[in-house]
Image 1: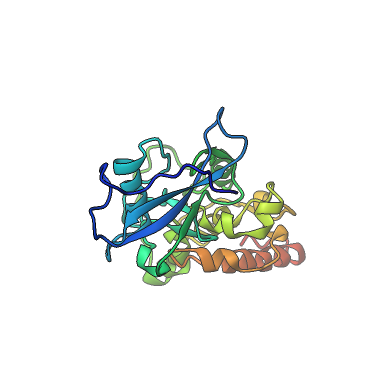
Image 2: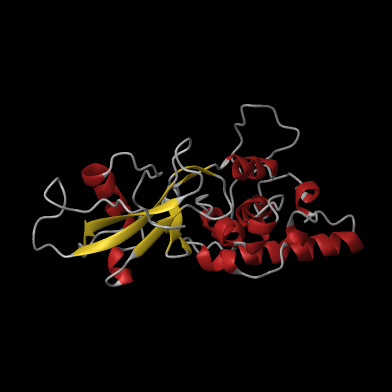
Length: 259
């Protein structure tokens, strides 16, 4: 991507005040119907010690260029919607601070591996379809709705799946995964980790072998481990995938073994 000749700068028109230290943010812009491919556009934003990258983007949108498009919601690392590529790495922009990048510049691009709708907004329909395919909810067999029975768990039963339940569907693991970028049919780290979350839940009665024991699912993983490194919640999807590989291998030898 190349930077256009015309750039927006923080100045007297709603920008940083004179004497304020600034940082250069180079933001990927893609406007359907106007651009053939994404280009980088430069903005100077105030370098505040407590500003995250998301604060810089909000400053650009509020003070410099209202046409900039991106997703965000909670600003607390819970919703997962503000994931973007920051200086080449998938990061949550609400938890990535501008001061981490010295004097800059800081390059902000959409998550890799996803079609770009506009600017920093990517199409997540494929991810949502993959997530739904693993049935990421508690399944009970032979019970009529509404369910009224309480199913208590021991601390040990909770601990068995708790780590995988921390996923916030930010899709950073998908952007970091070299398999998903090259093979879009790959089920992907987050979907498999969430399938394992329910597989290991003592209250669940489903069997997700049909969607996990496939070449495009756990067997498509080459165990690079970038998904785990990128995860902001320490879910460790790489471990989840390898654990299910063992489960699938055992089932091939002991077909009556369910999990």
